[in-house]
Length: 485
Ligand SMILES: Nc1ncnc2c1ncn2[C@@H]1O[C@H](COP(=O)(O)OP(=O)(O)O)[C@@H](O)[C@H]1O
Ligand SMILES: [Mg+2]
Image (tube, rainbow, N blue to C red; front, side):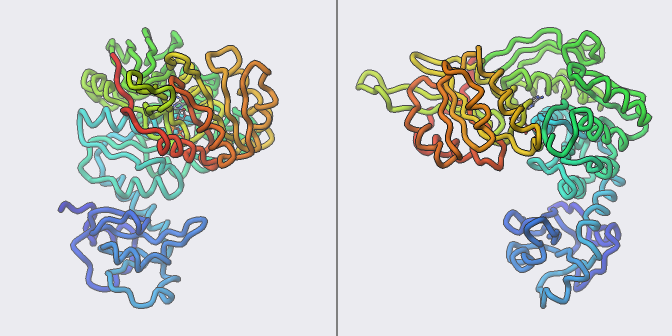
């Protein structure tokens, strides 16, 4: 088994105090005893609700090779049967290890921020760069004050590329994180009203994202959305931060990474783009205009870190939308079945992971581009977008613009904020509003008919993933995301 860190390096990087005989080293890093793998170091991080120190025994049971704990907690832990490294503050120790990890790495590093599309872009980069080298990337959306140092500390010393997601809800969150990551390339996917409740306006959001430029390596490059209304502001801020290489991606004629042809299909897209003097033609295995936009950033960043564009472009064909982020399910509906006609199919688009005005627009475009069969309808099942503060009512009502005049005439809404949309929709849109997910579930399940295409989306906290589970539980899978060519 290869070691991620020797115990010696681990102790030195964190300035820790070893207690008991140390193993040669550790094979991984965990902050959660439920997912800990034998041989991992367990870092007892204190979160909002829980304190890792309460799970020290569970971590030992799961096979932790070493426990990293706080000096102040040591007396209350009792006798532990695993080697321990004592530090003053466990999160600070993790950050120090992250910094040491970055210092020993010779990988090309890419950081991704933006109001939507961070995880999608990060996963697409992971996928395409795997075609050209050894890649390390953030797990899930590990993009905050513990997720970023954890991802850094987990980076093997021999990887060729590493991709970091960096997120924020407030100003001054990205700066310290990107200074640990020190990327060669920083991508800002787009600026939109996410977490607007914590900001005065979209310019303020852009300024907070622009902190990412402050951690770029010398000669590093910023990759910005040329089609975004805040491109100029970001461009200016990048230059103000001393970044000389600022590149735009998009449809705009002045983009460096420029889309020249684009065909959108229900389950994939075919594109041609100019990437640094190369003409790249690619099939993207996951649908949607927003995915094309993310892929332009991916191609640009891959080019900047010296990856072979032909290999990268062919890898795009087997991208697929992920659970909660556009994943498709084809389900069998028993309705109208006879011996010669076995009922019909329902297409479910699972967008339940998150929602803000930009991703709502992306998801509604996906729904409207998906063909229905027979008597089938396009159905949008939408729940509250959270953290929009004073702008919330207005932004929920404005979603009507994404629905009226499109191919979607049936809408199910849930959550207190969605009442504003229910009231904004005209009478010819068939609308069912319920207070929450539990009230909505039976109404939705009963309403579905063969041929329907259903798109489910809300902020995570509203819990529309339960509606996805309810559909998957009631209707058997025909196949997932069958590819048509
Ligand atoms: N470039 C984009 N522009 C607008 N919406 C997008 C974009 N990329 C993805 N989305 C939408 O945002 C949702 C969340 O995507 P994700 O990559 O998880 O974002 P993040 O990690 O930034 O929260 C997706 O399901 C999709 O609906
Ligand atoms: Mg994310």
